Image (cartoon, rainbow, N blue to C red; front, side, top):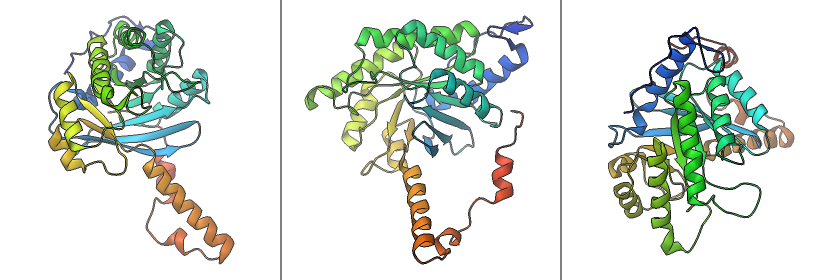
Length: 298
């Protein structure tokens, strides 16, 4: 586990944070850091998405020990300012460490990645997902040196503030089918290990799912592996046995929720009944309201 940078003893720390606020963020970052331990963790961390629109999705990451982290992802259809505003609102009401999936950083270069990271931390997040895909065109990745610079810029920006930001660096070699199939393993490993050396804590390689491939890449990586769930991927128990540190279930829970909403709408418009809306115990109205109330992190 990385050591926490020394918290500044001045009245305010970079960007207007108070010492107390900075210390709280450091504690949040360290609370969620177990899944990024260089050695195989004792329990796999599962990331379960709980809200998604074309603009944003939010997910909850939880370990059996009860340590959790909230993940919020932003899509290219929002601006960086809109993303920061959303993170700020979410940070006010959650009591677990908040991590922002910032796609490719909302940035054209490493300098802008660093600025995004500074603003994300100022908004209250203590972790990020940062990917190497180039958005806005055909499937492509940043060249390796550029991608390394972007990860390094994120790490240096966080260190300068004094926050041990948890960086989950994602390579989309498999997800975007970059190169010939027989070249993807070596390509993905080369990129992921380079990102680890540049300061990443966890290495996200979506679309690997066969047990033999998982076992092979776990052995080849120099940091903990994050996978993405999809049909046919092994069970959580098997993934943990294979050495996977973190699993994201992506959009699947949201698609299931949307299917339920469509079933309810079809029943209302078709038979005019409500059975599918009341056929299971769900979140109550008071509970939903209480979940949105601001509360201190302890």
